[in-house]
Length: 465
Image (cartoon, rainbow, N blue to C red; front, side, top):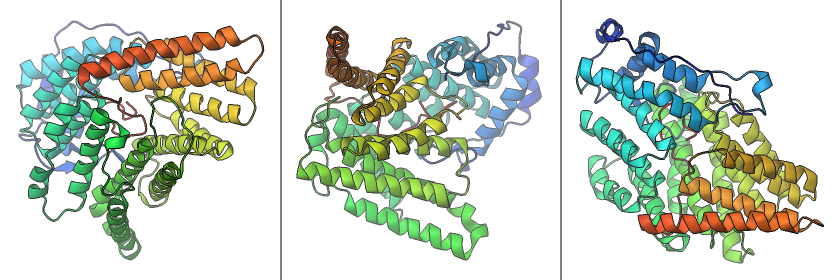
């Protein structure tokens, strides 16, 4: 299931001629004129200048070509189920070329050009995947300063901080009053920044400390539904003008899904475990399921380019979340239907994450266990565990997922004769991981890791990161 990657030679010769061929295509400013291009639901927009610059670099700069060829090379059918390199290893191989690309753009074109912005965006993601957070933050800071920090770049930095469990910096960046003042007539801006504030609060205090004034986010959901009505009516009356509503068209399902995630994480009183459901918990789960289904239906039926790969990645995340909430609600058959759809979407992406795949397989294993199909369940659990074991760096989110899968795997094995030792080994491994999670959380001042139910892609060469 993992993609095939190729080895490639490092070119050490000068690339100034390549840059000189594409420099004439650069514009003087890349601070405005944001548009959507290939980016889908949940993605942050890029300027048209930066998108053009990325295409030019891919066509003309050898180091950048080598990097993206290694990252995106298509896997052949014989490689499915027999991974040669993990994404971590692919990024490690591409990293020297990405660093050299950034150096070339800095030295040849200065610090205010769209080619440098492209290289910094790729480089930041590479460092993030490898767990080199200080370097990722440094690169993102350089990118933001080069653009004079437009709102979208502040949001990009905010997501980076949240994904690193840096709640104190995230709270500082997400200054809601500032953005309300900038966009007094835009109802979505306060909703979006409130969502970020709530995620930061979740990291710091846990699910019990989320907003209690509107715990089901009914007010937010109603505002989003009104926006949906605007888009739908415009689509019916004047289809040719739909492109003017495209940012709104994509913001609505994204925000619906995030408020669904906030409802869902409230139900988790203890990480990596499922508690006996109470009446209040059921209400939260029902609301999460409703909002996720609403977001998914909107993308599938009303987003103009639903087949866009990044829109598929959003759908994959929502399908996984729906599978998870159905498992929690003891509906394994429905859960498996959602998870199998997520699996199909995952296998069509150009930079599919083996750890995203592991999450799907782990949930499928849980579903088959609930259906009393232990043999299928064991195979899926084992595949998921192997994916985590082969990855050199796991974020806090991934460690939490890994520990949860190990515990559920141990529970399965513990029900079998002569497998008690195997079960205890899984539990012991989960204990070790959770102890490490606790140490890392203490260092960041957080109570909980960033939850995998949230969809905040760090746009670069993949939005599944």
